[in-house]
Image (cartoon, rainbow, N blue to C red; front, side, top):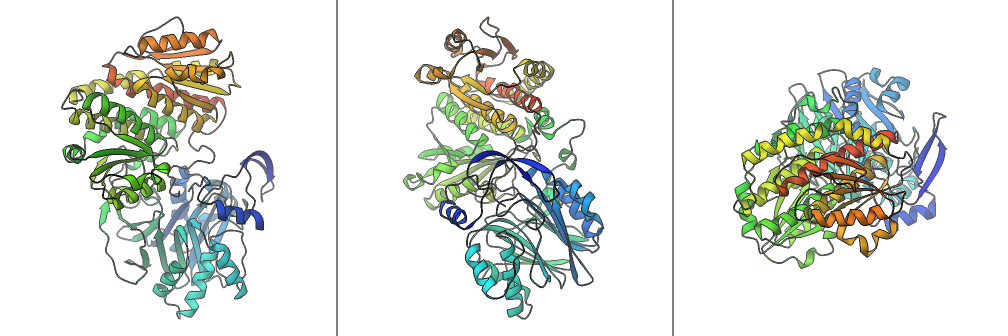
Length: 639
C-alpha cells in the first residue's frame, strides 16, 4: 500500500480497539480531497510498506505459516494484519489492527483451518486504520479473497461501475475493487481463473501486485511494477512480496517479471502474460543466511546491522563479482552518470569525488527522482551506474528504464542479485551483505562504499590503492571504531534531551558522509539534521548557529583539516556545542570521537560508523523504535 503525505499534525485518534494513538499525518478521503489526491498523485510522497504472503502446500497448516511469515516481514512497517484460508470449500478470514503478535493473540489467527491461504500487513492509505480496511478483502459472495500492494489509480471509476452493477463495498480501500472485479469476471468466464486474471489485470491502472485465493483451491497472483516472488519447495508453493516471507522453508525462488500472472493449482504453477502467452522464468537459489534475520543478542536490528559491518565489509569481494567487466563498460563510456535515492545517492556523491580525484574521470550524480527530467539529454554511449540496496526502488528503476531507452549501458550496484534492477542491467556488482531488516541503511551503505572504492582503484590503475591488504587493514580499523559504542552512547546521553537541530560539517570527500549522517539522524531520531559543506557556512548556514546548536565536524588530518578547524572556531564563537570526529584532538571540540589512523582517502568509511551509532542512540534517547522509523519503508517501490 501507499502513503500520501498531505500535511503535518499531531492528532490523537481512536482506533477500532478503543485505544488512542498519536498520528503524525492526517489523510482525508472525502470527495474533494480524493479528487485532489488523484490530481496530485505524481507529486506526493508515496511509500510502499505492505507485505504479501500466499501459501499452498502440505508442510504445515496455512494459518501458523502465514502468521510466522508476516512476522518475518514486519520491518516493512504496517498498522493492521489479516489472513484468509480455504477450508472445505469456504474462505475463512480474520484480521485486525495492530502488530502481528497482537492481532494473533486477539483474533487467534493461528487456528484458522486449511492448507491454503493468503496473508497481508497494511499501512493505512485509502481509508482509516480499522479492521474493515485491513486486508484480505472478500468479494460479495465471499468466494474470492484478495491481498494487494500498490495503488489502483482508476479505483474510483471502477468502484462506481461495480456499485451500479450491484456490488456492495465494505471498506474505503482501493484494494477491494480488485476482489469485486475478479468476482465479476469469474462469473462471466464460467469460473475460468486464467481468463478472470487476464481481464482483471487489463482493466486495472497503476502500479500493483496482488494475490487472490479462489474457493476452488487455486491461488493466483499478478505483478505490475510491484515485487512478487514464487517460492518453491518439495511440498509447498509460496507467493510473496519478499523472499523473507518463505526463506525458512525454501531458498528456491522465481522472480516474476513485470506483467506476469501466475496460477498455483495444487503442487504446480504456470506463468503467463495478459495475452495468455505462457512464459518461463528461471529458478534462482537465494543464498542468504536464515540467522541474519534474527536480532540475536542485540536489542534492535539496527544496532545489530551496524556491528555486522565487520562481517559484511569484505563480502563484495567474496563472490563472483566481475569488477573488470564492470569497469570496462565505464572505460568505454563517453559519459558516466550515477543515480540512486537517499543513502545510495550519498554513496554516488562520494563515488563522483573519488573518480575525479584519483581516476581523473568526470561523472555526474543525479537523484533518481530527478533523473527523469534530464534523461532525454543522455548522450550516446553513456553509462549509468544505478545504486540500490533492494533493486526494487521505483525511482531508480524508472531512471534505468529511461536511460535504456536512450541507449545507455546500465551498471548496477545492488544487494539483491535477483532484483528487477539486476535483471535490467548490462553488468552487476552485488553487496552480498545479506538481509538488512532495519529500515535505515547501514551495512548496505558500507558495502556500496567498498564497491565504489574498488571501482576507483581499478579505473585509477592503482593510483588509489585498495588491494586485499588495504581492505583487511580497513576491516581492523572499523572494528576499532565499533569499540567506541559505549563512548558514543555516553556522549549522546550527555546532550540536551530536547535537542532540535544537529548540523554535520565536512569538506571534499567528507561532505557526502555529512549528508549520510544527517539522513540517519532524521530517519532514526526524528531530529532536524543537516549536512553542510563546511566552506559554505559563511554563505548562509552560519545564520542558524547559536548556543542551542549541536555541530558535528568530520575532520581527519588530510588536506581539509585546517580549513575545518577554522570553520569550527567560527561556530564556537557563536556558542555552538561541537563534537569532533577525527584522528587528531583539538581544543575547539567540546567532545571528541577519535578515529584510528588510516590513509586519508579511507576516512569516509570510518567516519560513517560513529554517525550511525549516534543516530541509533539518539533514537533510544527519544524513545522511538530505530528499526521502524515512522512513515518510512525499507523499499520504496512506487514513485
